[in-house]
Length: 403
Ligand code: MLT
Image (cartoon, rainbow, N blue to C red; front, side, top):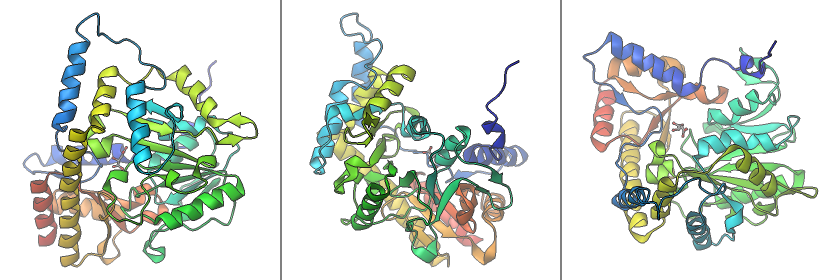
């Protein structure tokens, strides 16, 4: 008789964005005449940039002729893409070699999968609130202990609260973690820390022998000079950090799917190289991102691609600035939106995150994301994304102002 992975039974509810999707569907079915504006999930709305479309067309044509057809991609990614990635790191002063780059089908998969190379006995530390994939994937692996429905916390997870009281900067935990997840600029709060503060985390990890899983999915949105674009800008990071990168937010690949992970060769446990372990895992479980998509990824680093994407990022950041100013003027307390495409607001009059979600959906027909869905310290906060169209962003603001 087969047995199930009982860790799945311990997971509370459904994945955050599935729960929201269900609620919104129920509302639209009951109110078919209402025009919903979706500023919930951080999904992009602008079309792919012309340089990317051109690369896609060219690659599709190559697939049509036997001489230029491509079958299985190399496990770790095509050299043309890996070397474009290496050059981008070099421009930031980071010395990464192409055999430290692992191309994948997106940072969500990598952020869920990376825990596989670590012992089930490791203790993870996460910011609270946090992107739910880090905790849920560790829960599925049996690393998080028992879930307490009252506190909405796992017994074996170290939570690092990030709230307005500490300027959303995680503090070193009292108990020593083995694996530290950091997402900077941060999803969901839209805030970030300085390079100096990040260097302190690198020193801490090296001192206690922890590994940092550094999710830099929102790096393209950094506007301030004192913020690191990669953890490898900090001295010592190559002996303690794995970096996850996405093409979703900087290049609109949410529906195309492409990402990469950097596992430095210096990152070791005793004599064992984490780079070799991840290569083994990747080679066994993944047959490479599609050739067509990797060519599109290469175009992201071209001169034209870079210029076009800079404009796209500026478009979304204009939305962020409109939301931030508009909500402030309407009396809300707001954070983020300067180095990230998310606005994090305090829910008004002590309403809970979910109460505010329902209120906004029913009265303004605007969908956001309840802060408590990202962890207990997100209670009393609410996230709006800047990834909508400019017109929808302004329309949503107008509706919220009128409430
Ligand atoms: C979010 O809304 O938090 C993100 O879009 C989810 C993701 O990137 O998977």
